[in-house]
Image (cartoon, rainbow, N blue to C red):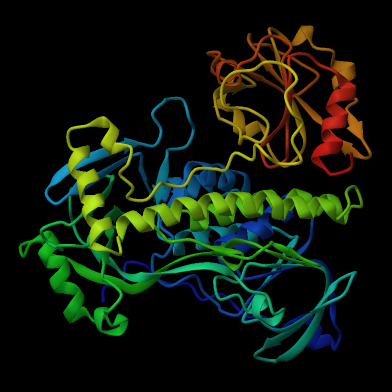
Length: 552
């Protein structure tokens, strides 16, 4: 098979604990250097938490695997320092098209409004994302990334976790305050602790083929139901970088996965789709089974689970890696506060609460998509096909078409960390919502609102001009050692200000957040809204911080 990518081999180093004959003592161990584990380490590093990151391999993932990275994931990757690299290398797209047999029946646009920094989706082979994350981690002194280090046992107490790590040069022990398991769907850590995932395995299989070819297909997602080149089944096409196209063929449950992966069986399927005249080469082939499962909770004593180790969804909808990155985004700041003694372990219960809520949302959407894509009875298939036929000519039918509801961030509106509104607001930036971006200027240079937010508690204060803000009161917002950084969002430009300031050049931020002069928004370190008011009240703001850190 053709190779468009050269897999790196990362250097194995003898652990200093082996050379010195001692055990390691660290605040946090992350197991698994996939996208979520690497993101978790970078998130903790942003919080100033030293991390030992262990992986039993010495390279990135084989094959494209996770392909689609949604707008919210890209915004998180911006904070980790790799968003520009991902967007520059990847294929940006916003439009998806759904076909029934030979006709288009439905299309959508992920970013129907302008003035967002990032596109609705970027397609990029997972190995590139991991490579960029590894390179970024290598620049961070607080991250000790060790390859060929396999965790073989885990025990925990009320105060910490002890791990035994196997390397090519022998064993060593690690004592950690906290362990984060990012070791994938088959999670050895989960098995070592005797924990289970519950849910549904769907009786169907899909073939993944990464195909290298020259084609002028637009950067769009194309999904077919019952196409003439693959009758009675479904097919998905995504454009990736390096002239690689990802094609997913529905196979059915009774197929032999090993037989289906053989080139002599894959190539005829692709030729039927593309035509005999189209030249192509295979780069990677795999077969997968739909799963929609999760753990009952994501924190167990001193062990916290993120990504596929905690929850698994069917791939249609791009909800796997995207939700895993949001796990890391949710957990990092909370664990930092607990480590610093500024919050109790109850705050980590909120990690499970919020991310289980998000996982259930993903599982529901993924299950509905799977049921629509792979009907299991003659009656359900007839119903599905009737919807697709209606969708050609009737708007109401299009809303029922489900070729994979694509990943969107979870609005944590029922979170116990939110302070309910007491003032009237309109729009979608309610407590629990992930922040909307908007174009702004900072120090006279164009930029984006989200570039000034994240990694700490902030109070966004909307003003006509900076001179109207009470800079003394705003600069003294601290509760139990947790500072709240003010961020003035001014209607008019200003040349100097004692506080962090951005200029809402065209009023788009004020519009998206439904603000008037004096309106304030309390923002969590993960860029979710914690509370909002029509006027500044220091006591209410500090009470909302206490609530958002489980200290109320």
